[in-house]
Image (tube, rainbow, N blue to C red; front, top):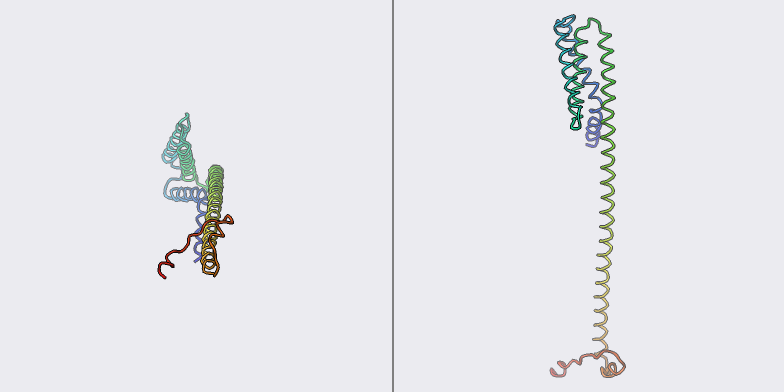
Length: 203
């Protein structure tokens, strides 16, 4: 059971790292399939892919311009433009060396761009974990202080109850001794003890 959890965690951590290579490899494979099915030296297909790549690059530039520019949208548009350019060259070229070179270049660029977001995400994750750890330590300290305070109060109450019980037992025991004189205790400055009159009445 632990092995399955470890395997899932490893795959979940490795999947984002492999995404740029998988994306560029998929574009290259599809472009070569397209090349084998009639795209090789096809001017019309090359023009179409050039127009699409230029349009995607223009959209990315427009999305990045201005104070309200969307970085995610611009990055997506530029990535689409690069993918279309790679597909166009890989589909038009008759050899495999140029498409492979462009694939390596596109993969390197994709990893360079992704590394920036990974670093930002890692910093945010570390900062969040540090903040959560500080909060947990603060709450744990407060809980320990409150637990010690409650324990001290309970112990004080328990000791007080035990002392009162022993005192009451001692007073009852002393009152039962022969020759006990409550007036003498009062005369010496001790608190006056009530005289049990109900015993006399019952006798």
